[in-house]
Length: 153
Image (tube, rainbow, N blue to C red):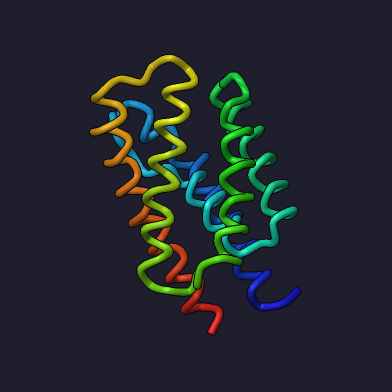
């Protein structure tokens, strides 16, 4: 495996393990970082489109199974990971400003979409809770990506 592939695997596995390990701590909090969404978005950014879609679908199925969701997470994660791989081809994705903005907007869009699809979208969820979740996810995802990038040099 190449260095970038190894970095992506470590990043996705690390965030996935942390997400499910820390999940019991975040259940009662109204806002919390969504490390699985960060794994999907960053994995999608660093993988090719087909591999990114498979990653998004796999992690979405895992999240839906653990949260007893209706399958919307698998669909949204698949689309988000695929679009992340496509955006990387269109935009210079190694910019320090692009990755945090991508994480923030992607997390906000996923959380607002899940709320809308499940019928729980209101002003508080869409304009307060989802953006705060997105900020926390952006900080956690950015720190994780930075640590992995520094360690792989």
